[in-house]
Image 1 (tube, rainbow, N blue to C red):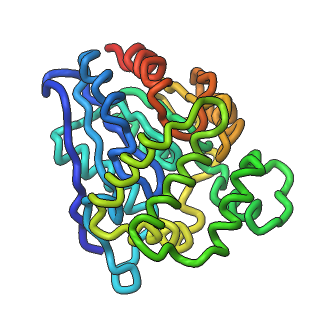
Image 2: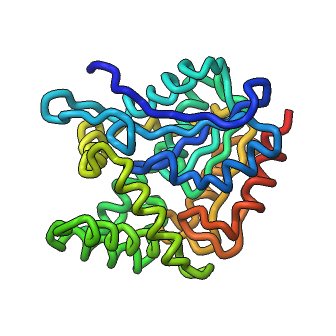
Length: 292
């Protein structure tokens, strides 16, 4: 497996404490909103965000010829840190990016100054299998993580059965519908802003279809996540969940229970996305958590 080029950008002064933003599966780094990043840099942080392989402006892979697993996606975290000269950083992670952050905090604790996990699931919990069983209508074994909300299951069942979008506008309309679902029902949904964001995501992608390789990577090594290791996390940890989380409801409390000393924060109205209404609250919490 040859290394894939990873796009990244940084903001703020090199002398400020570094925050590495790790976005979720199949998601570009620009889903960390510019305004949110600006609040962190204004608070005296050096902020770095990046596109995972097979997303955005990072390199794409012919998966059949050169397959990879989520271990490789996790190791890209180290590559980004090394490229920016970071022996360690504060990791701020969203969704499946939180799995990566938790794994790094266990595997290389010396590289993690603090850990913030937003809208994620506990490492080793098999969240991907929980979602797949829910979509397939299969029963969940005893002790499984909580299922996604019914509207989440209904949306993705219909999406899986739908034909591919015919053109750019249809694809972007579908992306907006997905954003609306993940936004949740606790705050107003601004469709014009959503369209601008999804147009940006569409237009900056080298190959929008390449994100499906993340699913193939998960299937290539279903046991990617180590089990029963979160008690090993040494980094100060903040776990954040929206009160209207549709994808992983209640998962954050389980993370906080398993990591020693972790703090749980519930953000009123927030779903699985990062809308403007929560930027101030999130940034203030992260700035306090990363204060050195």
